[in-house]
Image 1: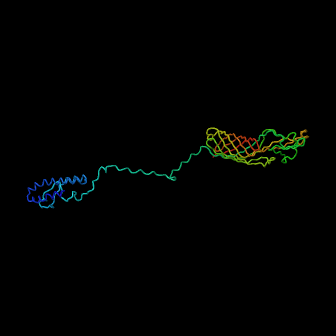
Image 2: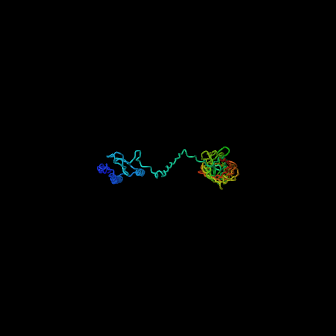
Image 3: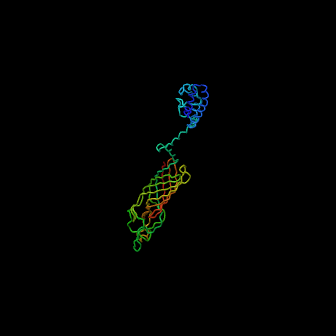
Length: 351
């Protein structure tokens, strides 16, 4: 647009170049035309930065001697540029200036650190559990004397009556003399009878282990061997000396194992055992001996078991890590039926 106006007025400018007064009148409309053309070009061009605009508005362009007339280059043109020139000065950057508002904004916070996964090996060890204030394990040794309850039994040993008829003895009993099993005759018309009562039975030596469960309960076992048993009972196998039982106990009171006084307790037990007892019976050889009161005695052994269930009640007296135990027991034995009381004295060690 600027070139078009320049070339449009160029002939008149050349013609008036020799008349300076005429050039003065021509300068004003020419400057207005150039300014109008410059504004139209700025409207179509991209907006420039504020810094570049201010610098350009404050500058005054001078036309160099590159015009078609040598004298025309001596006048200055304010507010416009010569055709073919650039608005930007050499060395100026065309990049937009930095935005102070963008620089003043706070930087985003750094991302949060990822959670650290603790391996099992790196985990701190669990604190050791506090020891129990009392002994949890108890070893014991004890001796147990068994008894047997007898009922009244007639014709306990094999015998002959007045008519010479033989009668078998009572099951589970064995009649013995100094030589072993009695081989002689026994009169069946008198004597030969077990009276009801309580008789001694075998003796047992036992070792045991019990474990505390909570404050009041125990769970354990005992094994041992029996002595003073019958060598054999008529119609039965040889006696079984082995004793084995499982036990479950309860001690009365609040935290009884923290107290130093007597500890009453009850125990239930079940297991394997054979209990043999012996009583003496009076017998007569025949009817004449019965009439003349010529009597003798025989040892009568009784077998019970070989399985049992039992209930115990007792007292325990502690001293240091030890405890003395004394209890009474009543056992029921089968399949050879019998009731066997017992007294047990033992010594326990807790750890």
